[in-house]
Image (cartoon, rainbow, N blue to C red; front, side, top):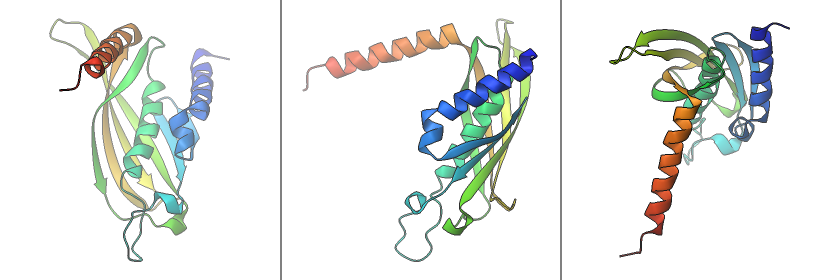
Length: 175
């Protein structure tokens, strides 16, 4: 099996075991280089708390589905020593999702942008265009997500500093 196919196979296993993906009833429908399709089941627990009969899918689920698809599309383009970080997202809702639609489908197409930083070091960023639709393909939202690639050792160092800062903050005596 070639390296690209092996990578896709590994990423499919990662998604299947990903706690966030499980929690939100998602399934990775398709994954290829720079393309990911994620289906998210919806239940009555996922609806807005409106008191009228206008209950629809809570708007926070759209970017969640989009991020799951976008992240997998980005992962498919990264080197083994890199992780994606979501830097920015924009959501444009086109129409509500109703319970009877049973699921939303997030289709992500990812473009990689290579550039040099101010010190002329090579860097990568990614733009993911994601369509959220129902199973029949009716458009519900469009999402644009921007990711950056971080080398894992650098990311681990940053997370370590954050954890230390948080631990020190919570050790402070109450005033």
